Image (cartoon, rainbow, N blue to C red; front, side):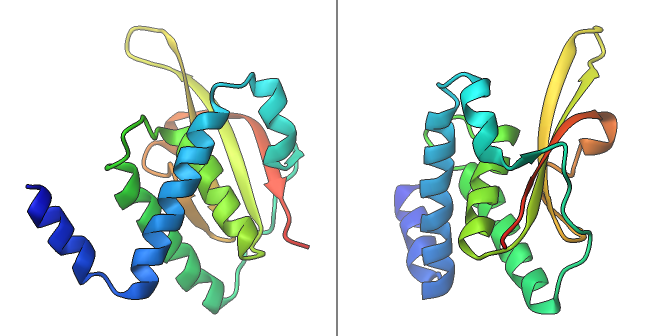
Amino acid sequence: MLHKKLKLIAALDRHTFLLFCESYLFLAWARVLMFRPFAAIAPKLGDKTEETAHHAGIADLRKLQRISQALMVVSRYTFWESKCLVKAIAGSKMLERRKIDSTLYLGTAKDEEGKLIAHAWLRSGPMYITGADVMEKFIVVQKFAKKAS
């Protein structure tokens, strides 16, 4: 099993391998942040209640797709929980490094038993980087815009 995984990693092109490494490091960093109170993390997420533009250049769309895919794949193989908020924060930092705007959304809803649940997702331009699969079930309660400029 490990041998198979190592073979797959060795078969990756250099750019994808480095993107996976970057994803892994930012997922780890974001997970460590979860041990801090949210009030301490929130100011680093971006401008509260703001949103970034819903358009992006063609070159950025390709980068956004690659980052989204890398986060989706790598988060399955972390030794820690890489849930929605961890992925959204990691993605936000990866986009910030590339000087690409993003908006992180926090939402709440009630599950089948009536318990309050939360979700986080990340958007850049017209594309949702993380968390899009269930975002429509949640009501946005806060958003944070991280502008590159």
